[in-house]
Image (tube, rainbow, N blue to C red; front, side, top):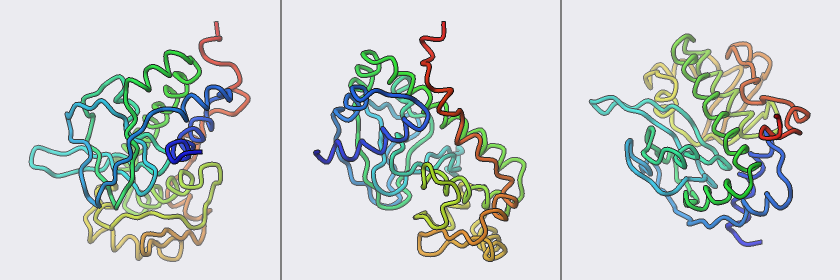
Length: 251
């Protein structure tokens, strides 16, 4: 198995948590052409409004999607971890909706839109899997809007730690320790808090969760979910049984 195939496997695994794919369909995704790109920490990969002919798959590190005001102030609107196709939606809207920034040293695979469109056209189940994946990103974004708009500082940060625990563990809830290689400043940009406020909030949460040297350590999952007003339904979604019948066969 070559490196490209190996690196595409986490993306296939992510798709298959919500969609059913045959072995042939899995292999079709694994055979997609890719180009590896290494990004330095804090490097912008895609600018707002920039036209692109590739989608970006994270294989190491972490990508932040951001929007910004006219004076350049940024708001992080999503974190993308290894296995995430950070801008899969760019297949149908190639002008960047938000920008992409490497939050730490990051390795991505560029996957041509033309190849993604071709495999989706050939395999309707893959097209549906892509659709479901974009739906997950939309669900996460909606939850983040509620987080920064209606929750206090401790709840915002606790909620982010809960979400990233599940996303880092994929199928394992309450992952007790996971890599989260971001700074307090970047966490503030995601939670709409100043660096000082983030520092104060992390100290208040230290008996429940700590962020140290790029690692999150959860000491009390139940209490963390309670503080974070966290319900994982938006991440878990439908059951496997509900995924047995493809949408195009519903009629």
